Image (cartoon, rainbow, N blue to C red):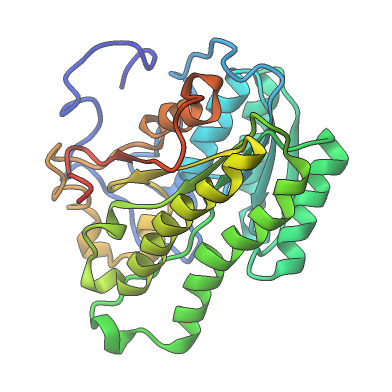
Length: 299
């Protein structure tokens, strides 16, 4: 683990490699505190420099995993953060809020299931009431469930849940948030390497991530006339609670081994990409998919 995100070191050995990951099966949505090793969200390592001073941000799935890492980074860069999460994730969300407040920024907790348009509209309205505007919307909430039988293992209930959580909610949130955005605002959608190299056991999830890539590109063209940029971060394998909550226990120890880097990413390694796309440093970047994949190409 690095002292901060600027400490140069061998990226292959920066975090645990497969074989040292323990993590056991957990009920969805899972929690990082029961994982071994516990994910690094940048609690001790992320160092900010006011790149998002006075920014008002909304992060879905912000309680743990990538969402928590982004919330910590945004706060340490000067942003106030609204965290959207499931009711079952209350404990994790409160911990994330503590970390945001320790950085001297406001944290607003907004529990709720985003699989309905009303819930998505409520998140945007809450942000408007608390902050007066939305400068950055991070659509990060996602659902997946591994099915070893591929197509025949995916029932309609799962298929509907995956698309409602990953795609419908993104669409509804963007519709609700854009009226609260002004020129200079940004939308960042979490896609995945699965959009480009889909795994059969994640067929439905991979399809949603491909949809997110396409949606990101078309939405960027649509919103550029309003001065709003839209981009996506496409992670490779990341060590988050979603892994023990959706994968068989026997596969967890090898998670990330397929990456050219030889290991899974930690959430803290994703946060700088979101900060870049949220900041004015990326003012000429829109409609892009930024891969953070450990060397696996987006093709």
